[in-house]
Image 1: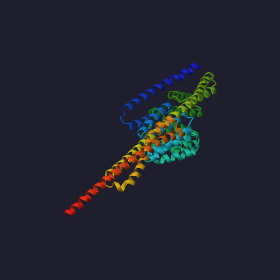
Image 2: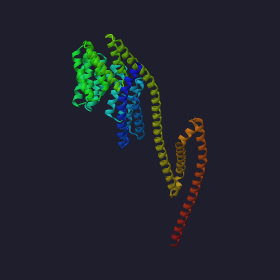
Image 3: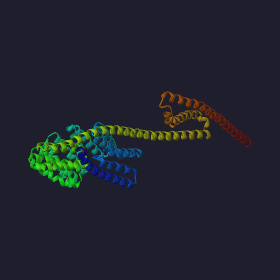
Image 4: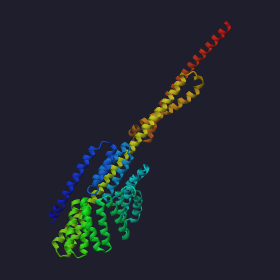
Length: 466
């Protein structure tokens, strides 16, 4: 029996793997054709989303690559988009919603800084999804409504998704009248822009609302209407959910053959897309169905499928806990790399400023040394000499600090001793330089006085001759 179950699950996982490989090949082709770094960042961030449902680990890898490149080139919009995808990956792992929230808030802060309305709207939506997943539906509604305001006159595709999320929150709160209004609005907007995926999802959601309120005929109608749109969008997860909804409606209507057919279809598509939770739910329905029909072999078969799915979910949870730790470390390293890059840029700027200041002071001192007003500027030159000494010391400190920090393992005492030694070398050198300049000033002063005296004598002699 176990071998049959494994073959049953494996046959569809192979189909799913082929689909993933095609998506991966398409991703590589698009990335190869991208010419600019900024375009590459956005392409990586967008295409990482394609792996979210089936391979969130791949989403994370691509998003981190985009994040690293965005930070390297200083592309803040791309950095925010990449962080948003990193948050999506954490959310998909299902065991670290606080981390996903932390990343979304980082992205939100960046988008607010650059006034990226579209990015802010996406962040609000994702934050709302996190609250929804954790059962805080009122807080989720608050963020979805914020996102709705931003998307209303901007992006109708995004707007249709957000309105659907609002409907889902009301549905979770069992406020079905409001849920139905928002699901209908989502359907109308998606129809206007021909967004088939959301059209199918909205119709399915309306079917759920009518089923929950006991209106089985309307539920059946909406479930059936959604199928062509879900198929056109290749939304297999949506199809699995839809078919299980149909099975439950037919079960309520005592149409057992139809209930069995659609439950099996739900299991088929759940396997096709590789969504273990939906495999479990469809298997559980089929096991209960056959148990009620007293067909024990089939009941045990689907019970084993349900158990295998539960075991797989537990295994996935353990695996994802480890993956989360790995990606936490990768994200930490990316943050360290970004901080180091920022420090290097700041240090280079400071070195340039110090070099410019030192150059200007040197020019001023040389100018004063060579000018005829040197006598009146001796005190000024001494003052400028002290300033120049301080700038030279700061320049050396900026230049050697990273190497010194690495060599001393950030030991404050050793670093202080090294800088004191450097100062001890610079001060005598400064005194010698100051003495040399003073000597030059004296000599210059003598020459100026001698030349002035000669001119005075020559003038006197000329006056006497006349």
